[in-house]
Image (cartoon, rainbow, N blue to C red; front, side, top):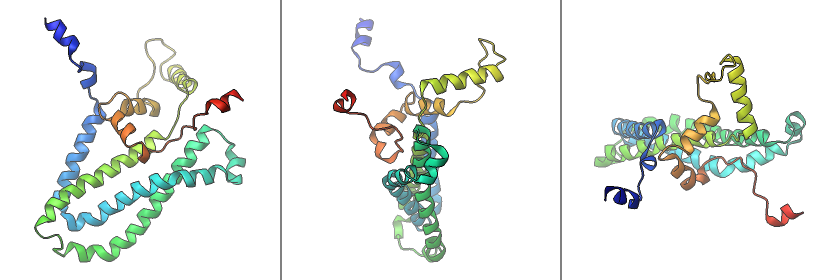
Length: 225
């Protein structure tokens, strides 16, 4: 009877498992809530606006800037044209836009922050709005980090070569001692976007905000030629 009920349920233990990323995500949200409550909306308005613009502008413009870099004769003459250069160009485009937004908001904060912090423009909702703004700000920071983490693409051959290198030089060539003292970037990608509880939902639902370095899939007519 118990076995039959267990088989009918749609939930399984592996689907409910979470890892370090899920814990870090919850901690980040709680910290943003606390930080926003401490600052209030008057202090949080410009910082949260900055990060919302960074995430929006970078995710919308990185592909255009990255494409321009990849087709630049100077870049191509130095690095050639491959998937690693494509990923690097897209990340550079993302960071370049984020830097421009950051510099712009530095000027705004120097001019308007003293006036806003001493005002009561948000009235009784000062700290309630501040809590929401704090969560949004740190969520945008997290999305920015995830966007950069999603950019690199590793082939099976590259992963195998990295494992063989670590085993040879840090594991003494022993079978049971791999020499992987710290997780590699491809392992962090898997841990965040595949084996965590929230990562796959973020990658699917917020894919438009992440850096996509994968080449476009070829259509059937293209493959036939």
